View 1 (cartoon, rainbow, N blue to C red):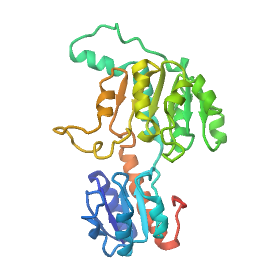
View 2 (view 1 turned 135 degrees about the vertical axis):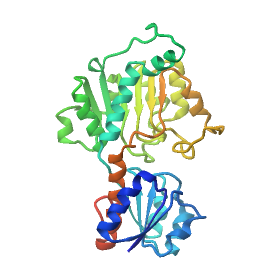
View 3 (view 1 turned 60 degrees about the vertical axis):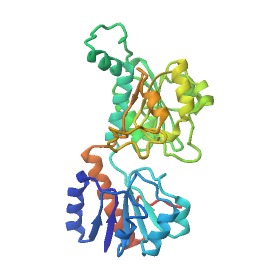
View 4 (view 1 turned 90 degrees about the horizontal axis):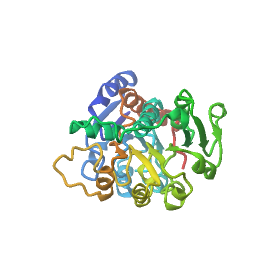
Length: 328
């Protein structure tokens, strides 16, 4: 039983070594994302583990199929980087890798507090020895209504944390969780948009959710609304977001993800000219916080993603399915 691991990070290696000893499988690994130039590394493997960056298109999937690869695992919750139609067409089994929701949920609440308390402005002013409070009056979370869109593992954990702050919590999701309903009020999107002071997003990127935040949906929100996105950048229509920040509709914006982030985030671009004008433009606003898709990045998450990826592939080999299989 042999697997190939692409996009390996050094802080994943110790867990991989531990799992290799436990389950006695062979493996080949590379720090490079899967591509036509390194597809040969998968020769002799039955399964491939991928990191959630880099496009896995039909051409790559055809090459994997020709080499006898049957099972795919992505070490990420999201799988929008993989051509699902081609996965189904060529008969692959695919699973993602869940991890404890705490890392992203805690980061989400941190972004809310940073936005309310104008942390970016305070940090900037200190760089020029300006310690006046003129621009730094903030808000209190307990006095706010927070809307949570998506109440899965991460959204549900965000609600649990928020419940300790004493704020009113509205939520909207395709599925109702009875435990979540004890802490938050399920409602329709229209009501959530209209009544929320802060809105945070925890839904997958699907055709139905792409650009769900656009000029039309922004118009339904309160003036000065605070938007938090630690899910997927493409949930937001960036042009509409820019307009909302410029005209004050959006009072503060914090995003750990960004539309068109691939090839920029998780790479040292110190000496490069970034080809994402919207990212460069939004970053300069005092009420906008951008972080480089790092909410997940704790050792807890890295170990969990590797373990779930390995065990997912092993379950595929042994039983033909696993608990994280993406049904297509």
